[in-house]
Image 1 (spheres, rainbow, N blue to C red):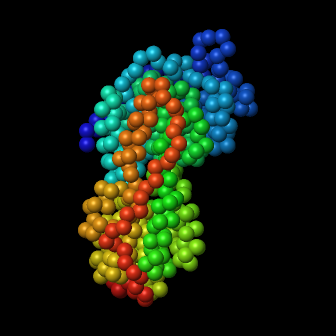
Image 2: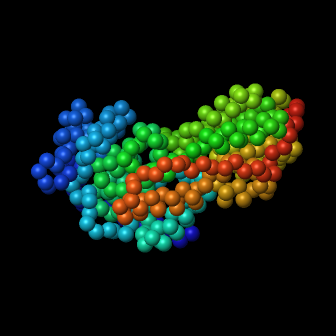
Length: 364
């Protein structure tokens, strides 16, 4: 896919978070930020470097003060380019491999076209890795995946003074460009499609919660609009957490698809989708004859199934290309932010049909 994973051991450089943002008279210092935010200078430093956990409320206050005062770390405006874009991504294992592959493939292609390489910054160190990349000027701009509310990476980016693009970012992160992803219309379309086929009970399968925070598949909007549409159409919905293992999926489906259970499933997890489809076949349940299935996934994963599922297709490739182009546009002096979210489509497939009343899961 043309993406080179750059592994760089970054050591032995000073933490400059506690130094003035410039050498000129009147430069904003970390002490100025601390006084204005009503916290200690060490707290501001911890927010910027990610070296200690800070409460969301305090982090927001420091973030807003950094933005208002225009604080920048010393050396945050390099005169020459490194020719590198950093991509900060949380560790997800194999839970959304299709989305990640599409995103990075498109981002690498766009970066190569524009004369840049990509540097991958994983989330195993929290914000520390991102801080080191920006403080050491290893990258000209930063792309952050799955940015969410109270994201601790935002203060790091604000203090760095480097162009940044938040993928899936909520609107309140002013001053940073974003490629927002709006799943609300897809949530409504998904439920309306199933309701139109006569389904009156739908189960929404999601992965177990993780401490790492929001993910592309979890962006606010889908769940709220899905349940709101269900209320409008008189459809009963239930959300069920299900790990992506054959045993866990088997237990989940055995519990859900009993007598008077839901007649349709919305599988909101790329890793679980093939397991769900396979388990249904093993249990003697036909898709869509006995149970309808809708997926929330990448086009890659949808295309790997035996039958093409009806799906909310997350346009990960479009997100990757847009993120790179918006980052480079800032480097070239263009606007920092652009309006207009990316809206995934609901695509009909072969996995949904009219509801079949009274279908029970065979024993065993």
